Image (cartoon, rainbow, N blue to C red; front, top):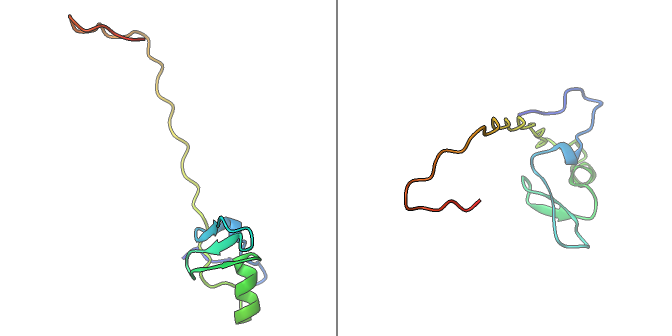
Length: 86
């Protein structure tokens, strides 16, 4: 698990894979790992209720940017009897 590196560093929910946003205005934040919604960030709720930093923190991985396709230089001819809509 990608946990927090140093003991003094707190987990940030926005950087966690389990963090989510709910549609409920009264409970806008959710933790998919522990299965709860809250008014405050889930890491603060865990700290308040458990007395420890969140042990389920898993840092989001950054996806690689998509490779751009090579520009098309010429279009192949359409088969006979078929019109090409461009």
